[in-house]
Length: 336
Image (cartoon, rainbow, N blue to C red; front, side):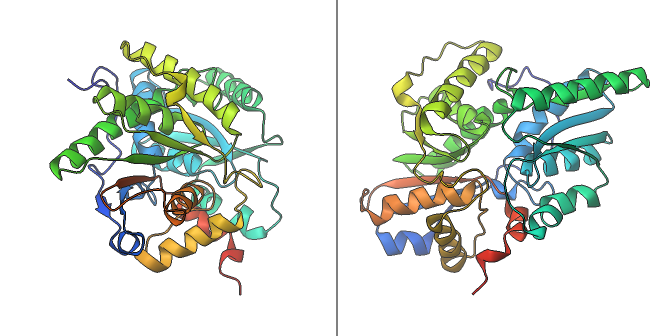
């Protein structure tokens, strides 16, 4: 029985997503490097959020909601995929875009994810702060109350850590899917490398791996907060997800690995190593990473390889969480 079987959900994801060997990268460094292609989940450019949204929208429909409300940065992949999921399920949707990234480039505000959100016809609101999760969620709740007075029923997909992260269930299941693929290919993983932003993916994946009796380190790459803050966030979510599932899996603090070496200059702002990693994988393997999540995560993996930390028989597994649409918001990546 799956740990997530008892929860309401909808089907939004093309699964299983591929697990592929990066042949050219592996040959160059003499270490097997695998990529879990959750950029191929099939929902409006794909990405990790489709697995998470299955559980939120399952709850929304069970509660009789007719409208989804959520919040995120201007180039939020979560916002884009929430709108797509709402359209797929016949729901109305309103989104709130936060001023989280200090970029003046017009492409950042007009191309990529916000372009797609407008194309899909979502109603857009704006929130002036970028680091006020509780405030952003509160505005959504106020909007839900307004809609209720109009005879509609809204379901809020929250952002802050004060809420039960039902989306993490998607990666409890996603980790199980990956472990089955690794087992079928007789691959013993040495290290998993995953992005860690809201921490729902990191948390669900770590819990799912441990629930499948795998003790391989799960290396979370910080894309929004420093490592100390992120470890606290992951620990809080681990407890919340374990409680809601009803399992007793003890994950010690030492097992929560958060690496902020690629965080600077901040969320949504790529550094030179991230730009290099994006160009490297595009030109070695024809695989596209994004500047906010997958690019910074692969930059950490690439640094590990360049430092010679792993051997020929090791298997590094990188979780590609998508975000391709946001590439169009960063034209400077290809300016000569």
